[in-house]
Amino acid sequence: MNLIVAVDKNWAIGRDGDQLVYISADLKRFKALTTGHTVILGRKTLATFPGRRPLKGRRNLILSRTPGFVPQGAEVFSDLDSLLAAAPEDAFVLGGASVYHALLDRCGTAYVTKIGRAFPEADCWFPDLDARPQWRVEEESEPQEENGLHFRYVTYRRQ
Ligand SMILES: NC(=O)c1ccc[n+]([C@@H]2O[C@H](COP(=O)([O-])OP(=O)(O)OC[C@H]3O[C@@H](n4cnc5c(N)ncnc54)[C@H](OP(=O)(O)O)[C@@H]3O)[C@@H](O)[C@H]2O)c1
Image (cartoon, helix red, strand yellow):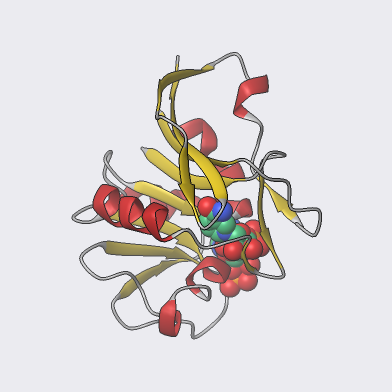
């Protein structure tokens, strides 16, 4: 499986249940990479999407143990094993923190947007792949910039 994530300088990924920042070029890339694929996400990440609705053009597999939580257009799984049994190899893990931690070792490729800023108010993090020898940088984009925010696209592959 693959995963896709945007991290700050300290591998922080969110605050107060939302993203640290929205970068429109990154959102376009996210859409291009994930459209046509299955996506895997936790209930709290679904709540950050517009209208709290599943993503169009993708099969949405949601992890939740909340009774009666059945968003239209998504499939809900109350445990990892049943979700994994339904997930194809080309699925993308979209987060959030709890789902990345649970599925990192199942992923072979990580599409990481590295934001060149630290957000001290962050309250959740992604594991630092640079500190994990099994993850190697395969590709790194030129530096990008949007509204004064600098970022790079870094693709990691698990050895
Ligand atoms: N920067 C990025 O690229 C990025 C991407 C995605 C998310 N985020 C951020 O990450 C934060 C959310 O992360 P989070 O860890 O708080 O929430 P999350 O992983 O999105 O969702 C957590 C919920 O998923 C369900 N869940 C997780 N593991 C489960 C399991 N093994 N079995 C059944 N259900 C399971 C539970 O739902 P129930 O409570 O319903 O049981 C749990 O409360 C937000 O700040 C968001 O903006 C950042």
